Amino acid sequence: MNSLLKQFPPQVAWVAAALMVGGSAGWASHHYVSQAGLLSAEAETAPEVVAEASSVLKASLSQAAEPPLQALVPGQIEGSNQNFIALAVERVGPAVVRIDAERSVPDLGPDALNNPFFRRFFEEEMPPSNLPDRLEQGTGSGFILTASGQILTNAHVVEGAKTVQVTLRDGRKFEGEVVGVDSVTDVAVVKIEADDLPAVQLGSTQNLAPGQWAIAIGNPLGLDNTVTAGIISALGRSSNQVGIPDKRVQFIQTDAAINPGNSGGPLLNDRGEVIGMNTAIRANAQGLGFAIPIETAKRIADELFTNGVVQHPFLGIQMVELSAEMVDRINQDQQLNLQIEDDDEPGVLIVGIVPNSPAQAAGLQVGDVIRAIEGAPVDSPPDVQARVETTAIGDTLNLEIHRDGRDQTVAVKPAAMPPDLR
Picture (cartoon, rainbow, N blue to C red):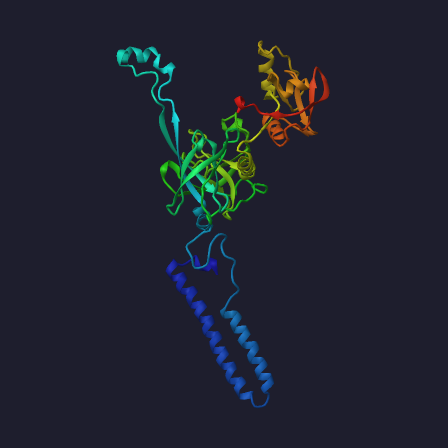
């Protein structure tokens, strides 16, 4: 029938289809009336037979007039213009907040005041060196974890501020206390004094896959309650790949628009569950956004709410991925004074040892190649970081290394990362 309808203009096709439906209905009505008359004539002789036949006939007509329910298009509601994105936003939106932070920053440091450029143009009008710090204001996003006012956001949104102003979507404003900041993972937590607040529902990244839907909510560029949507572009992006090697995070990559002000807001799946915390960390990103997996953010948040600080395990090594290109570069670097064999085996090369670190205490050396940790192969610095991050401080890690042509195992006990390296 579809092929037949395509031969006619749309208006004719619709009329034909309507006539066919109407003809069927008319035939069914006529057939029912005829059968009803026949059944009436025979009612006196076999009433039980007529009743049964009438019941069967009515059931048959009911099935013809009321076809089986079709499955709704995923994410749509019958009789509504809402889709799954609108539903997710309706569910989570009230728990997304705006965070306005104010911090003191030096106006002009001594180095700037002594710059000959300034001296040349300002001479005697140079400002005094003891000027008070200026106030710097910034805006970001966050989301409420609990009805009692625990809020999750990015560290760079509130870093340097003791208190912040938190604004809910309904317009209510609260003074928030910055309970803890962890710059290593770019996670921070804020507490406001309130009850019965809307809270988000946390999801999981365990079954997340590229191509799935991603929804971001936040306050980009000062535009409150902005919603953007896209897909999950990639998983497990390392800090090095993202361009912030000092962080310890495996990022979710999405093409949902994430701009300054989105930082700290939630990344949702198609069910409205929080799967990550958005972070606008690449100012030059075009069509790229990144989010901290919710498992990482929640783990750090719990520790910050409990202790106010997070202790990260630390070995004290500098590493590079052992690729053929890297081997050539290292062998040509006279300062390193290393000759590495290109044996096509995966691994991570140690190029530096921090003094007085667990690595030095365990006897690790520059030039050692880490092949595996606790039996699990590693082939990149993020692999090593991820394995160390999940280890308790003081526990023993067995590193399988290659040194001077021989394989051996070295036991290392991670310590807490020194504050000056955070």
